[in-house]
Length: 289
Image (cartoon, rainbow, N blue to C red; front, side):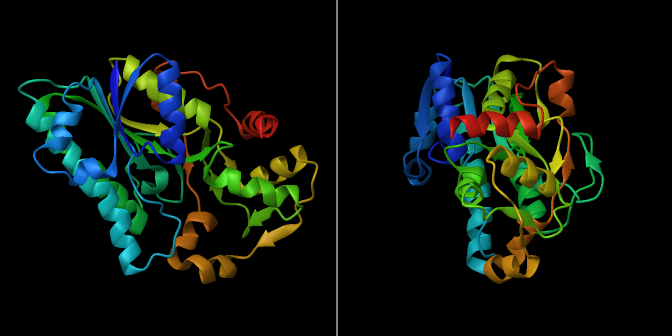
């Protein structure tokens, strides 16, 4: 298949691109310049694509001032809208088989356990971004185009993301829980993330909302203890919430709060996780580090 990917330069995008190439697929890379080009360049670029994968979006872990909030929102809303418009322009000539759009589990409330049927959404900034982001795919329904929205948890891998930044600290004995450590930690191994995306592509019955998280979420405290144990290092430190607020302001909530999320729909479709819990996930990643 020809798979067009936006956001391919990020940690997840790079890993997914390599995985799909190794699986025998042809990749069409959508760059930032393609979103600003004129003369329907974006539509021309993706006209032969069988799959559209939209992962574009700037990092949310930064101080949420007015400028950064606008960048976080526009980097998701604008790219999704432009891709949907490009698909619509091409519809008379060629329609992809599936459009997969990224989102995040930050859409859910902190309380409770959430599968894809949950409508208990949060009302904070990140949840509002996710809501607006997902709504941009609505016009695809008029085209009868199979669409999947993937609400992704914390993706763990050795080549980027939060895990790659944490491991050196833990190796020096500087690791520790964040705040109380009781906050939920819904995660997914990068390998299972890539396999789940391929599952959605290949399973023609897959459509709608999917939570891309492992079936056994944990807590920040448990994650910290297991990681420190595998590295044979202490984890005595506690990162206080006030210190994170000094650095990140409101965005500190990304680290001090969490949501308990389950991948009910993937499991119901028979998808099997190679790394279903935090122990198997961290054991594999530590051996690869």
